[in-house]
Length: 359
Ligand code: ATP
Image (cartoon, rainbow, N blue to C red; front, side, top):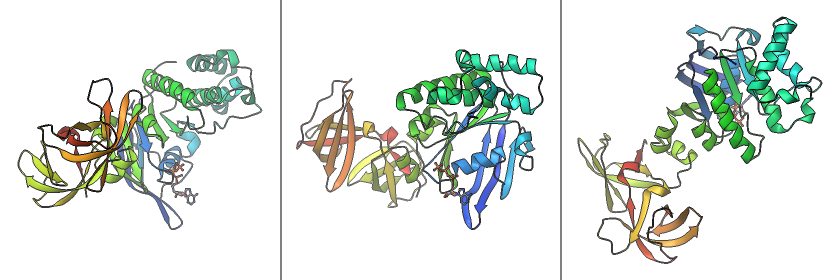
């Protein structure tokens, strides 16, 4: 299939209320054409509701949905030029693969010969040409999802919406399809909105990643910035950071900020605009906490090893320091010293990856 339209998408002050329940609140997102926006968040945070409003299956309570600058919120779903794929495939069980894929063209009154050419192209694209005459019940989950994708793309939509498309597949199959989906999206250049609650999938399949919490976008960023610099405790926890600690600002300078974590000073090379003496929370990933011997000359936080688990590539430590539980990972690729359970150690925090969270 050839390159598709790369339409831009903009959500402006989008709100959705069901009776008295506010499911989506003041969502503003601006996505350039050709990229993937991924909505990530726990169950019930409003991801599907946003997708349904874009598709037109659910009315907007207030706000605007702009595709290439035109507000589509008043247009009937069938006339929005949007392809959608759901977790449960939603294929027509009584139709063959080829008929399922052709459906959108048939609805648009496209001639049979044009349909046949387009279906053949679409099936090549999802590597299913050999199964054109099968029925959905004769396909695996991964194959059914490829049919759903071909069916969504055959109309050459302006946007592709994917609602947990790989959620029903086992891990191995899901990883394979993630890669295919990514390649296909790049090749076609189609603007895509993906909903998932799987953080790894979100990091892999996003150009722009929006973490949602209770109907609001808590942080929008590129995946690596989000991973490295979560802004809030919610985002840090949702992206799997176990170490979130109370700290105090010792010194707030023009170029750096020194915080105290249980009396251990850590100097960050960032100006944070926090007052000296202010309480704050910090987040640090286990791989950014280094274990060194208790008599190491470097400054660090004294701790004891509670558990050290060998997990192949890394040793996962659980440590305790004055009642505080801390997790640290030591990569076994680097020949670092290993510490037995019960040993006294010192923890050195990587100042670049120690992040002060917003209150
Ligand atoms: P999940 O990952 O479980 O699909 P989600 O983030 O996609 O969750 P939504 O399906 O968008 O969440 O739902 C957001 C909230 O709106 C939920 O609390 C849900 O119960 C509520 N909700 C969704 N549809 C309706 C409806 N038709 N009437 C009333 N409340 C609804």
